[in-house]
Length: 291
Image 1: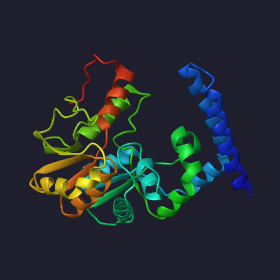
Image 2: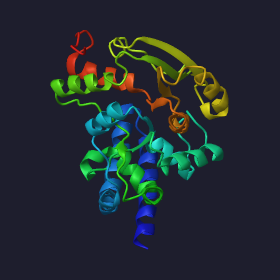
Image 3: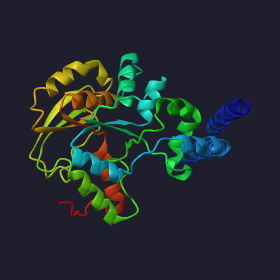
Image 4: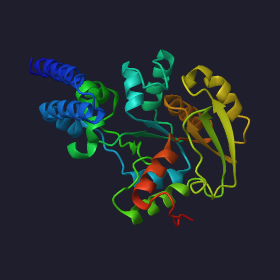
């Protein structure tokens, strides 16, 4: 009964804030009103969020996950909020519509124990470090997410490429150098949606032997899954590292390729995260000692 009351109150707060924001012409003011409503809801559900954290499986740190990936040369499939939303039946922004076949495949990957594939999930270590997006996510579908996970299993961190340090310049440089070790001296194939926002950053990939591309659609990439896989299989699995930038489809693809003996990394939009953090810490014009 208490949860039902809180969920009803949550809906009321959200609708009230959305209605009130319509009367303000200023975008920053409308945003502040919505954020104030979110803060009230998060405060209301704090105990439920903290209970979620206490029941959440162990997740290795980003550094530990990177070291494990570098030393093992395994593939990695990552599950963020978008993948969990799809599995539970919610739409994933604009990149991938709900697809029952894709959902079944993602569940198989999430439960996989294949020795050649690392499974990564979002870290949930304490209330404050979750951030507002995940706090709201937990309120809405946290119970459903916990039901999908094995509490006795240790997972790797889905943020190993994206949760870059932004408080310390030395830590940032050390982390990026660690990431670059993944492809140092290797032939790389980037599998990406044609016309997507992925941007190749020279300073991230200046230590590779070569770069090739395989293109998929920018939206609903799972619809061309087999065609993309056929193109990937044209490359020698022993010679190439595959960086997959295809949203939730990359999660399934990394697992299947890993099972076949390829090293495939569910990579996501890491260069964009890198540039944002880099410019915040150093400015756009500063040359970094990343080699």
